[in-house]
Amino acid sequence: MIDDFIRHYRSNRLKYRAWGDFVVDEISKMLVVRGYDVGTFLKVPPQVRVKSESSIAGKIVRYDIKNPFQEIVDVVGVRFVVLLTTDIKILEECITSSGLWVAKLTRDIEERQRNNPELFDYQSTHYSLSPVQEIKHSDLSITSEFICEVQIRTILQHAYAELTHDNIYKPIKEVSKKAKRIVARSMALMESTDHLFCETIVELEKDNRQRNDFYASLSNLYKQAIQAEEYFFSDNFNYEIIEIYSHLVGLDDGTSKVIEYWELNKILLPRVQQYARDHFLFKQPVCLLLCWLAENSGYETTKIWPYGSLLEELRLIYSTTGAAIGDGL
Image (cartoon, rainbow, N blue to C red; front, side, top):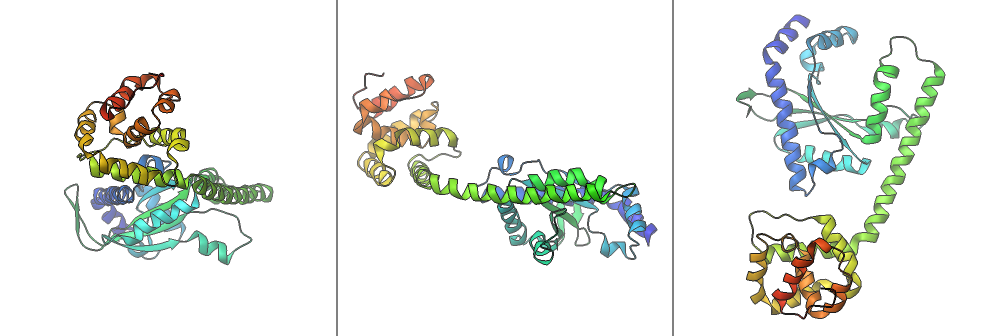
């Protein structure tokens, strides 16, 4: 049986890698569809790992595997590392909602914690994915016999796993009780830290909800008004402008003010679209807010403008609306 599986592995190694690549590509696409920046959301770039022949043979012998075709599910694997345990749920939703593969949960952190509340050890959520039907990828045909193991961890869980995998769980000699105790304490501390981080995120989201909702509405208004194949929004820049001028527009009813302004001044939109081709400020949703500010709080807007490098573009905001330019310009 070992020889049969090794022969299968040798002739299909490229297919295993192709299946891993396909899984990474599809999950990344699903994150983008849900509005996440993959490079930011994933804290470690996902890399496809295909086991070596010696590793497979060693695993079969070490665990006395009788039927490797059914029992070995990690010939190819990929690991996704996120910031917090709440982010794990987002990846799980991507995995379980796809119709491209059959997803089987093979290691569940929450279940292990419920069954062993006093235990603090290795944590990682694992899924085994196999194609629902034949898939073509990289000019290779991948059928349901190919399984990819997906591991999902937080960055704290990943650090713990990197430290302990070879030293604690696969040691050359017996690990001392003191070392095991210290490692268990470190995982307990990591769980507490993650819990505090999650609570912090909830509080920060509460604090920033009004600003974020205002930006979301402004972005939707901009996309409706300025038709483009692609948008180049700098979120941090937009957030900063909104925060600087929030006292002038009032975030509680600011959206309705800006929408009403543009309903009455649609004639100005072609000029905004023209400037958006070559000017950073006009590529941002806050340019619509700045036009409102130019007409309603012109002097104060220029007085507290924070970007010297964008003064010329701010002047274009004023010339677009026909508002009087404040002393600051």
